[in-house]
Length: 86
Image (cartoon, rainbow, N blue to C red):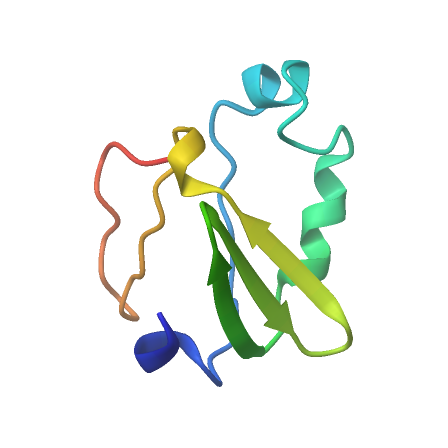
């Protein structure tokens, strides 16, 4: 992830299975809270156990736990995402 993502900006995000993830407490109730990620630059990426901490500019952090059913995809500009993804 460090090789591909450091210094890049988040252009957009897509939330899938939103209601189920909110119900079990894995996702914020306010989905607009994720808008803070857009246009943020990735400054560092660290992993510890099953968690990936992505530090963004302006003191914003994104914590990912892919072992809980999620998948992380990196798409090159203009590429079409796979049909099935979380």
